[in-house]
Image (tube, rainbow, N blue to C red; front, side):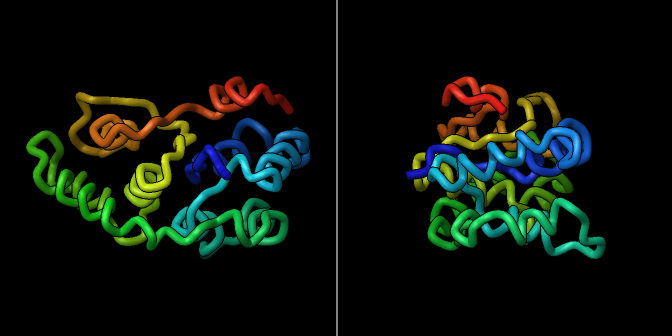
Length: 165
């Protein structure tokens, strides 16, 4: 069973900045291997962020053509936890209303990732870092901390599973 749940920024930043397909294909091969071995997954909302775009690119094509259909799991199983996250978000006096509205946008993957990770006891892998003083945006680490969901960076995940690429 999967242990890690990948945020869309793992794919986007790797593709655009750190590990372009033509420069570091070993990264993308490792993602496929970890996926095929059931170590990593993501959710349908991440797939939507990556693939349902007005400007399809190499990343969206790779996700559609290389990742197994089972990689992006249906997130509706965690609607009960999502509701708890929505209540927490709305009741917060720390964040600006615009940050709350953005975080709970229907198609934004972040709250659904947190809900899915909590419901299925998975660790979220993201590039986002905790910024507890920030009021104008809700980053993944803050609700993770509140709801007891573990999160880490991709480098930390690779270290933890003893893999490299």
